[in-house]
Amino acid sequence: MAVDVILGLQWGDEGKGKIVDYLADQYDLVCRFQGGPNAGHTIKIQDKKFILHTIPSGIFRAHITNIIGNGVVLDPITLSKEMNILDQAGIEYKHRLLISSKAHLILPTHRYLDAATEASKGQSRIGSTLKGIGPAYMDKTGRNGLRVGDLLTQDFKSKYNNIREKHLNLVKLYPEIEFDLEVQESQFFESIEVLKQLKFINSEYFINQALSEGKQILAEGAQGSMLDIDFGTYPFVTSSNTTSAGVCSGLGIAPNKIREVIGIAKAYCTRVGSGPFPTELLDETGEKLRTLGHEVGATTGRPRRCGWLDIPQLQYTIMLNGVTQIVLTKMDVLDTFETIQIAHSYRYDHKESNELPFDIVGKPIDPVYHQFEGWNTSLDAITSYQDLPSKALQYIETLESRLNTRISMVSTGPERHKLLPK
Ligand code: GDP
Ligand code: IMO
Ligand code: MG
Image (tube, rainbow, N blue to C red; front, side, top):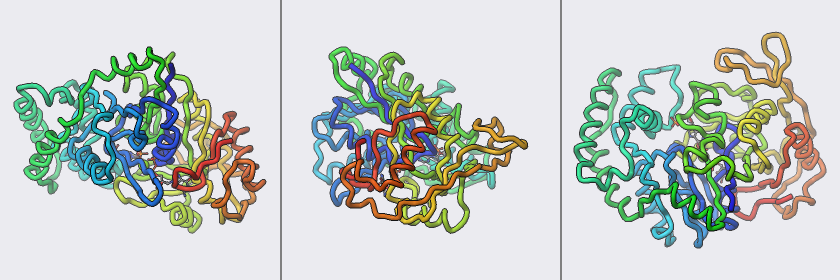
C-alpha cells in the first residue's frame, strides 16, 4: 500500500512521460494529479511516438488502470483527440481510463479568455500554451467552474450558458482577438459525447479503496516545480501546484501515504515560454543543446530555451518536494561537449548564495559555474550503469553529492529501453 510520485524538478519537459511509462509496469494505478492539456508527455515505443496531454502515461501498459484526478483541468476536445490516436493505434483502454467527476472542465471560452489576456500583455506575456489553463483554474478557485460530473446533469446546458455569458463579458475588457467560438463550441459538444464513453468516478474513494487493498499507485505530475503557482518564478508559472503537495489535493491522498518522490531532471535545463532562467545560454552552446536535444515544445512546437544545469535551482525543488531519488534524463545530449558546466551557486546583491531570491524576476542573477571535462563518447550502445564512461560517472557523482540525493537511473535516449538503473 503506497503512493510513489513522479514529477519534474525544473521547468517542465524533463522526460516525465518516458519514465512514467517505463516504471508503470510496477504499479496497479497511474494517476495524473494536476495541470491539463498544457502538458505534453512524449513516449517512444519502438518506432512509434505518442504525445499525451491529459491521459496518464501508464496507458500503454495493458494491465494498468489510469485515472485523471480531480486536480486536473480537462478539455474534452483535447481528450477526444488523444482517445482517437489511441484508437487508431489499436490500444484497448476505455475500460481502464477513469475520470474524476470532480475534475474541472476547460470550456472554449476559457481558451478565448487565455488568448485575449495573453495578447493584451504584449511584451510581459507569460508565454502560456493558450490551452485555457489559467482561466479554468480561476473559475475553480472562484467557485464558478463546471466539473466533469456536471456533464451528466439535466441542466448542464444552462450552467454552460451562464458561465459562457460571464466569459464573453470579460473578454470585452481586452483588445479584440480572432477566435472562432462557434466552431470551437460545436467541437466541444461533439467531444463531450466521446468523453461519455469513459467512466466518471469519485476518484478519491476509488484510489483510497485501492490503497486499502494493498495496490501500488504512481502519481504523475505535469509541468515542473519551477512552474508551481506558489513556488515557481511567479508570475511566469502555471496555475496549479506542480509540487508533491499537489498529489494530496489533486487525488485525495493523505500525505502519510506518499512513499517515494521521484524527481525527474534533465542533465541540463530548458524552459519554454517567458520568465527567469538564470543559466540560460543565448549563444551557440545553447543552440547546440537545442539541436542535439530536439528541444521543441511537445504541445506548442515552440523552440525551448536551453542552459546549463543549475544546482541552487535543483536544491530548491528537491527541498520543496521531499525528493527521495532523481532520474537524470537526456545524458546522451551532452555526449559531444568538450566541457560541461554546472551552476554551483548564484551571485546577486554583491554576495554569493544558494537561495533563489524573492525578486527572481527583477534581479539579475550571475551563476557561478563549475566546469567538467565532457566524456566525448556516445552513450548509445551502453546498456548498464557501470559501463558509463568514468567522466560521466564523475558528473553524476558530483551531482549526487551536491544535491545530497541518490540518482537512481540515467536515461540515454527517448526509447523505453534507453534507461540505466544504478
Ligand atoms: P515531459 O513533458 O516531461 O514528459 O517531457 P517531453 O515529452 O515534453 O520532452 C522530453 C523529450 O525528450 C521528448 O521528446 C522525449 O522523447 C525525449 N527524451 C526523453 N528522455 C530522453 C533521453 O534520455 N535522451 C534523449 N535524447 N531524449 C529523451
Ligand atoms: P509538461 O507536463 C513546459 C509553461 C508555458 C508557460 C507557462 C504557463 O509537458 O512538462 P500555461 O499554459 O500553464 O498557462 O503556461 O508554463 N508550461 C510548460 N512548460 N512543459 C509543460 O508541461 C508546460 N506546461 C506549461 O510554456 O511558460
Ligand atoms: Mg512536455
